[in-house]
Image: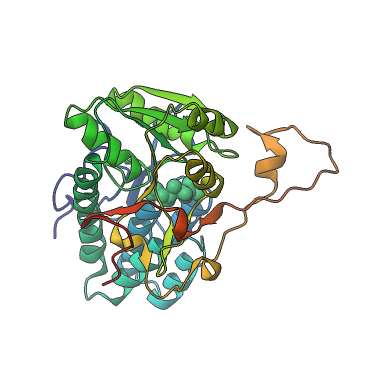
Length: 332
Ligand code: MRU
């Protein structure tokens, strides 16, 4: 295989000239540094497993399917550098525990005869899965419908096209004229920074709201459906996603608004029986105690900063995967 990708990976928002979210670049992994968006679009290179693990831990690359690609590409890096693959696998999978895709991608590449080819194939396959998912999910969006979403489940999180945002994007491409309520997603603002950035470039109307305003939007009947992505779906259908998803699902049920989860089958973990078994990452309390690097709380303040929560399957109206829309996650 040459230095060029097997096929153009494409831009996170399908805009010509934009770099790929994450890709193999001959002897390195190249990715958009999501920490800098929307202010600056910068591409950075990881030359070593350590480099890439640092990018993963600090959310330069993030979102479950993009993490799956990153995990696989980390093993590809290890293989071309002649590193110990078992050690690299252990290091990568320990970086962030919740998104099952990370360990899945890393393991797939580590078990392959050619880890580089396997990692590149995972990137290509993820793009295909998300386009199919968007196509299936778009049928749920009524003409002129308003979708409420949380965090970023667009091309930045999913290598390309997006899961929850892929549904909106496909509806837009089909001429259904969707609009989006974008939860800002405290504390790291993946909604306000990244989802808004993607929708802006796609030309899809959107409105950013503080997370706590979702109740008002739903109570007023201003959203037709909620669609979110996922970091891990347990065998019983419980869903781990960005902190703040579970209260959104409770609110959606209270106001009779259907709550959908859009995720590729690579996010389903059949080995995980239910939500209680999903490891939830706790991040640095400073992410809560500060805002944009400025302390906003008293010096003595403590903070609890779980990065994800678990929504029980009973609150989920349907699972949108590349195979279609189903009342339970496809496990086979
Ligand atoms: O901490 P992050 O930004 O990696 O969290 C991402 C999410 O929770 C997304 O909603 C999730 O990965 C699903 S979208 C691909």
